[in-house]
Length: 323
Image (cartoon, rainbow, N blue to C red; front, side):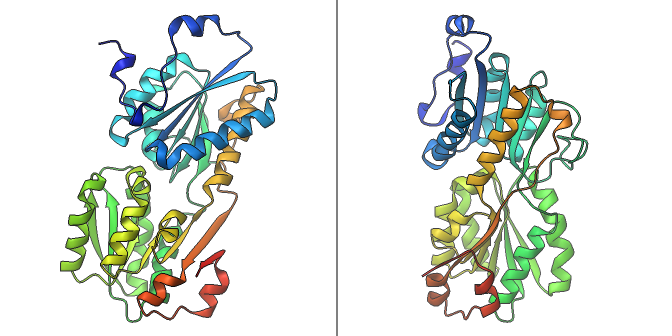
């Protein structure tokens, strides 16, 4: 089996470049790899938006983009196969950033949506990344997860037991949990840790939450979780669990509240960094950026179904109230 045929791509959304075709590309054409960790049905619009932003910078179309949609478990081999054929790599999620750190050491890398790039060893510091990587973090501050937990305590009366849904082995979990564990005693809640490896385990995970008599749900971001946003929202609704997620898609799908970065704006930030690199900047000199826009979505329909009265102060802080 040829090496390229071995890559597991979801839905076969992008074919690998033939070696002969690559040899014929002008040296003035920049070859950009774009690896999104999840299915094209969920992430395809981000890939489209990135390419449109690049056209804004290079209207002469002096670039080509190879987009790849990889499963979290196979992102290593996707990056390993793609890296020799590109000039710049754009990659999403913490697990993707870790893969790039291992297999894309000889080219500039722009990561998007990485929870804690310093903590997981992608860069030396946010202001001076060093090495070949820079990008945009997922969290605006280290205490964002504590803030999500606090929001749940503002919504759910007499909240004591909070289920925490995590992806086992995802490098973002350790960083996220530090904030949550510090905040829990001050907020007087007990954490019930629920780990999954794949979305297939979600129904069982919610049955476990039910057996533990969880009163609310805190969702920890990961590529697996993002790909299952709709399923998590539906299960939380079915099990009558008020939830707080980093992803707006969960609130739109029926989850109670979300607090997180606007990923559409993050795509623009990533394209801007790629533009600077193509024009000669070094990733080591480009500070890692925080999300340019954070937003809170509240699903008032879900709140009413759960017979929850939301504080007016919380509603006033929301960017969107879904009625």
